[in-house]
Length: 264
Image (tube, rainbow, N blue to C red; front, side, top):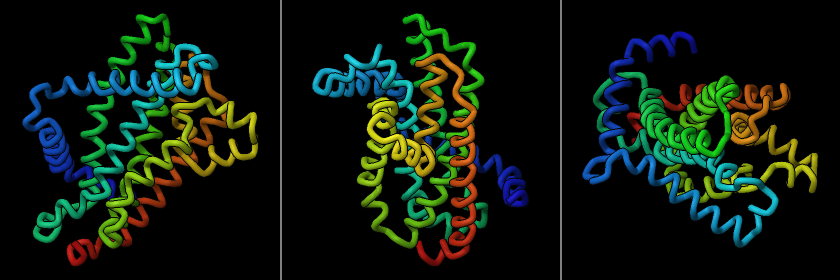
């Protein structure tokens, strides 16, 4: 693994080129360009707030529900963009895969870096809103930075998994939106994990263990919404979950990537 990371580092200029390409494609022929990075989360916050706070009464139980929502929803959107795009990335670059020899990991990693740039712009807007509303998250920035790193690790792992498997099982590309929809409701984004814990503590614990994104979302909420230091147990769940997925994804990608040129 270390040797592969060194190889990717040696090809860092290519990684930058791929990342810039992803960003250009995203905003090509868009009149408002990067402004959509600020508009999209605000629109989503309004829609989700209207649905879940007004129709399902979430705002009665959760203070400042839009802030509660955005503290995890932005991270979720970052994740879904990475996974949805990564799932078809190898196939989309079939000609390059067949003709040029380079670390294949660069393709899903460039997608993640491009999405990260967009995510950080959205978070910057959220942080301004938080300060205006009196949420002093600054003392908890170390937790935010920690969970951001954990999410990058986990997302890279899942990106490796889906990008590699889709080459061999093309139906995944069609199923990915359904998978992400189910995953969305299995992750505490629009609801509080404490409600799940009250219904079934065992199920809540199982979610944290089996779904790495649960711990990641809870850590984001600790730093941006609850403004409190998370438990060591939650950090350990996040660390173990993220690293486990990354290692599993890396191993799978290494096993399947030698035949990409034949399969695409």
